[in-house]
Image 1 (cartoon, protein in one colour):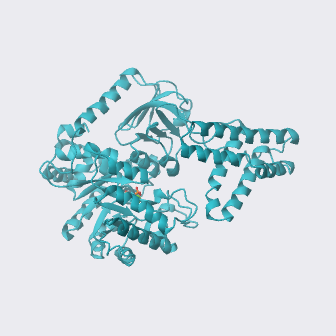
Image 2: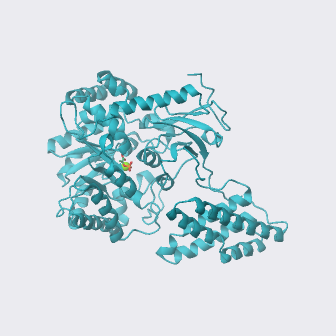
Image 3: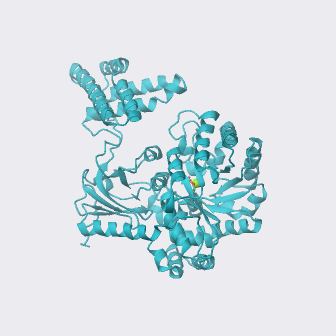
Length: 579
Ligand code: PEP
Ligand code: MG
């Protein structure tokens, strides 16, 4: 392979290599599509010198946006076309234009006038009730497009994609990531974010190789060919042919190793370790349920219900929730499904569950704690799940995020029972993602829980006091940190002592070598982005339970994440290292 050019910066040159933090081990080659940030009017935009000309420019900008949206609607699928047509109509709304012109007359600059007019109308929509409130987001999108047009900037949001594309952005909101089409977006590169930020998690979920924290990414030229290597965390602009061939050979080797290795997860000597899917949308759930062969999963270990409702202005009603859960339960038939109650707050704010002014979102009201302020949300959700279980005659499990004390565990279990979930035969559990929960795992189980599931993403964040969104602290957030492994070991031991299952549902479970260590630390199931299941199954099939335990002991005894990984790797079958 030819020597890489020096790392990029603004305006990265062909051949430049940017380094960030890779998510997963996948590779991708595609065309750079740079996501423009939303256009905002300049803070000090002057009043127009020629009001008539400014009025004409504003009218022309609205018309141009409407026409672009209609054009996109013509080439979109039916459902998307309807949405785009409806948004185009908003850009032609005479009332909106009149309000913008009124503001121009009052002395606002053109972009400011449009922005303020849109905000006025959004306030009216929100005040008009649930249905119209949902349209405020669409109207803002129109406003940002018109403002971008006036300022001569590229339109915000994802442009139409012609072929395999690598999406490049400063950062992506979870709501934007969730709607990416993996058939077109083959890679994601962001300047900000962290390896366990929810955006990265959702990208992994979609099976999209991702490099976050790639400094200088926004300087990558749109339209350039990019090679993304999540294992090394590198992004190469206009890659040489030998690198492209190398990446292709690697994914082919990996595919060979995992081919045909279907069936339930078990170690080489037969210890069952259920391989489950982490899912966040109904489409993902249905795709995971339908997968067969190496891709097959044994159930759902984590349904992130907040992802289902990220874009909602108002809380979804019981019936709507019940329908959504029933769809997942039906898709999985009799297979186990673990539904996590809303994990709102921190980097997954839900408009319908406001947490108020908080200095530090990650340490404030989030997860189960939001029920302190919005108890009815939790009650409705539990009742909706009980209704879905009854309707589908299945027995889903339910778990609460961010449980910190046995009292919280007992309270959650009582609420789940009161909602009728115990009668439905559902298991009731908690996500262990606060160190206090790991330290007191035995007490949590004794408080009335049937199982625990370790969320290594947040557990790492809270154990190391390192914001999971702060990619600059990725070394502390490394899931091989022996301190994190020790908390997993404590939880695993508590489960074994109580005879109750302890799964892992954090991103750590999808790294094949680490998955073996987690099993050695006592994990009885592993839940991950479905795309990661084949490699983890293959790793388990080549390793005995005793080797998993030996690897766990070696990793625990290490004094750094690097040494922990090396120690475990030294005991692994060489083929596992190629996965
Ligand atoms: C975790 O924290 O590990 C977890 C599974 O939950 P989330 O990533 O959704 O916070
Ligand atoms: Mg979490």
